[in-house]
Image 1 (tube, rainbow, N blue to C red):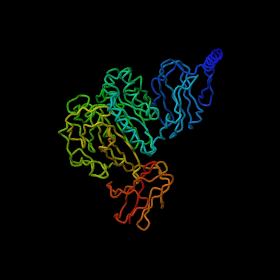
Image 2: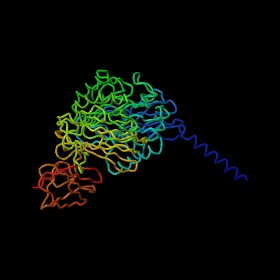
Image 3: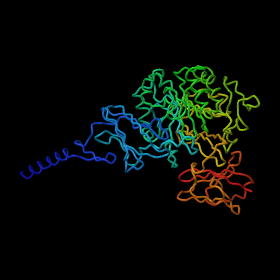
Image 4: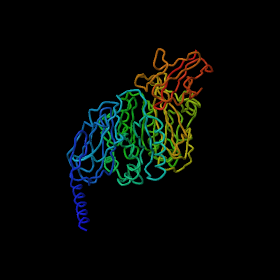
Length: 550
């Protein structure tokens, strides 16, 4: 009995000693001692990335208890040797990392002066800074319209995209939200459930941008920039991310690589010509020198889904007031939500009236489509990709993609739309070298099933490419240029170092798919004389080269 009592007392003493013992925790390169092994401070939201540029990024998170804000970061996961600290106690943490190198991956963790609160031992918390302004390289954006339902449909759409990007090594450079991010009134608790809890994994490694939707606007105000929407997001107001300073987060601009993004408020702000938003947008469009221009706003210029652009005032205002100005200044792609469906236009210019006034003829013949392929499907393996030169302004594709969380039907018969689908999904925009001294802007509609139900390309010529910056292939048979292939005895040899070849496709000069293969040695004797673009997909990336058959 005495032995049992002694043993019991020793066990109690051991447990007490363990609880009182000081533990150690690495924070960056420091060793911090703690009196308690379990923290009472919990990260309730985030971290998430905002307003990324080539030299800076904002990291935000929320804690349940007011505490200091510490971020440790570095280019090696095992050596987070740099830090930014703010000793003010808060539950809403906002830390800006500055003087970063462009196109560089920085791992980070978050915490306070005593401990790390959130970290990833596998390296899944990081920011990749934007490229230098004007850089021509592969860019990928994930586009989500009206996602915030917090239901199974939203999560299926999310998972389909995650599966899509898991197939290659390219990163998601940005997330573009088209409004209505949290139903039904954009309250803070709705944002938590339908936004942060759903996309937390991607928020820790991809910068999120957004325009305001009508459901976000029910609890927010653009004039005072107040409410949950404006508390959650931090957008550039002084032109610090590129473009002309807007002075407001309701509408703003930013640059990424050689793309200019202009984000408008179609819900609250005055939509009249010569009103502040219009005048700012005009100045911004006239001053950008970027190769591509993409516009985002919630209410679509063209839709016959759950909303009708022929009869609703906000939609009419954006089409009649803003589209002539944006088109005159070279916009290439317009992204909208609001209607809970997917609708994608032909290659358009000058259609600012009702649906039944749309004319399929080419603009030189009094119609509203641009180029010989403008009234086609925009597909390399179909009617041919849409064509546009850098120095010309005419030609843009309009997409209403508001089905990232639900579908709501509608007539879906707008005359300017090539495709209209009552289907769940999100969009992926990918810009890449075409192998001929230009670039392709590719957009895919990825269903919740993983199927790609629509896709198209805009090819733009006259872009000066830096070959070394556009996904250079590790090793190919070379002639005079790294961007050219040569066939020997009618056989083309594809040699890839440290990568696994998956598929090779051959496109002719008008973008039509001519041949495809999975072999490293390909017989090209059946190809007619001329130039071809060769798309080479490996286990790591997709590359484009040119091939001349004589």
